[in-house]
Amino acid sequence: MMMRPTSLAMRLLARVKGEMALALARTFIARAIAAVGSLFLVIALGRIYGPEGVGVYALAQSIILGISLLSRFGMDNALMRYVGQNPQSPHTVTYLKWALRKALFLSFVVSAIVFISRGVLDEVFGAEGLSGVLIGITLAAPAFTSGFLLSGFFKGVRKPATACLLENGSVALVAAAILCAWNWIFGQPEVAFIGWSYALAAWIVLLQGGIQLWAWYRNQTFCEACSDDNSVIERSQFNLSSQAFFVMSLAGFMQAVLGVMVAGWLLTSADLGLFKTSQQTAVLIGFILIVLNAVIPPRFASLYHQGNVKALGRLARRGAILGTVLASPLLLVCLLVPEWVLFLFGKEFEEAAPLLRVIALAQLVNVSTGSIGFLLNMTGHEALMRNIALICNAIGLLLFFLLIPLFGPLGAALALAFVLVFQNVVALFFVWKKLGIWTLPMPNVLHFFGVKVDKET
Image (cartoon, rainbow, N blue to C red; front, side, top):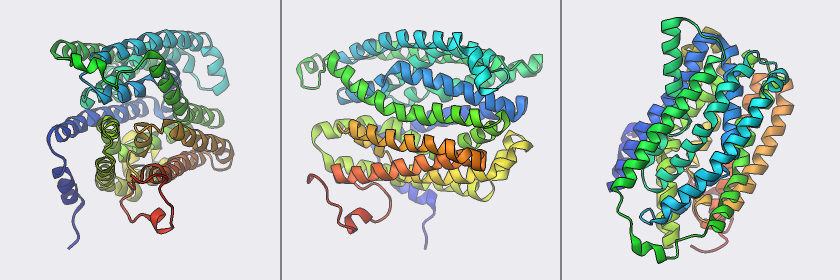
């Protein structure tokens, strides 16, 4: 008799015990709140402003993501790695101070540049109202950036649920609540109010993050003996690691920022809104992977630091299987009845059904390969993962230029799908080659074709 996906998922969860099981449960709830928030904001924008409003928001969001990526300079991942190696070390707070000082300075500088050039950006993209939205976006950027740094820190100290509530999903949820409340009480606001609501939401989320940090610090008992162990790092080492993570994050910059900007330049605001809606909806398929990526990476770093590669492989494989099982029901919904899903945003969004199908299939590959990017990052292979991500996303960015003129918004979906699939397949190859770990929930085809591991583990 075939086992139901829910039964298989329960069996997999039963094998995860103790502190990690509790972390997964809490993080699942926190991530669910954040995922609903991101989707809720797009639904609210679609209902209030239509596809054109969603298109303007997509451009504004890509800009704040770009400011944040440039400002935090890979330091959120460096915090997750080094804090995660030894969460009880008194040096963890020092690492956070280094990151916050540098990121706040950079975010103010980049935000000022965007503020000054907002009129030019409005003309370049031909998105009416974008310059007004960007006023609020630049005010939100320092808080938005700091929230991601606190998120990386909390992941390192084994508080992934707290970390999830500090990222863009929570900001989107609060912004959606503010926007809907204003629309209900005072009527439809101007498009510029999208930026103001986002700014207020970003600072509210950062405030609760600061309260969480103070509560954690007050109750923390540091291990003073840890000050002399080999996990303590110098600032120069922290900066070098941050730089490596930053270069790798440029791949995300290409996809989340430049890709959307190219689409916004080549598409109308309405078509960009259709693409953004299908992309945001398909992200829900990878929801469980986002949960796992908030919990597992610090454990990857710890296990590799201990030299326990076998346990590292078991953890990575179980995460991939669990993600695939839990993502399957939503994948089927997006493939079989995409129009029904997209109707939530408004009837005019139903024509994005082909886009949703394409991106949904790519997200399945993303989920089924597991946390392979973090597996390379947390085991000293961040430079390799950086190169993989940069090359794949550069090709994907080129495809945005080539496919959008031919197929319109569907071309943007195809370009995005290519990046998701190709990057994960290449990373899967090198995870096997460098670590001898196979994460895909199917027979190891690389082993079958005689691809050997560089070093026996």
